[in-house]
Image 1 (cartoon, rainbow, N blue to C red):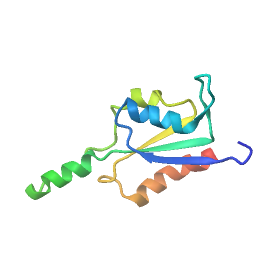
Image 2 (spheres, rainbow, N blue to C red; image 1 turned 90 degrees about the vertical axis):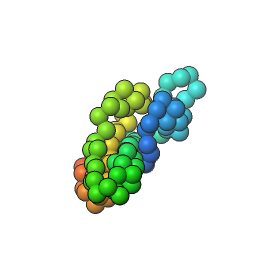
Image 3 (cartoon, rainbow, N blue to C red; image 1 turned 30 degrees about the horizontal axis):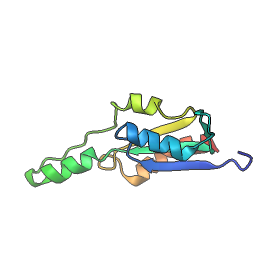
Length: 109
């Protein structure tokens, strides 16, 4: 912590197994308690809109599911101190996502 590391994890938190893998990667300690390796921002990538656009694109339908709202329980299962930012690449380009996430990254450091 003295070097103030900021970890940015880009992943898809689709189920409890993903949460457990993140916990295992980010936590120190053997007693079941989680001591984070550093300050952590998890960018949860939703691929649903990308898949829908691919499937419905031939019909001329442009879909954008939007931000993930049903994963609150999974987010709460992550260790305390982990910030989660959902991102749907079909609805929001990389530039907009970076602009939206920069205040969170600055807050972490």
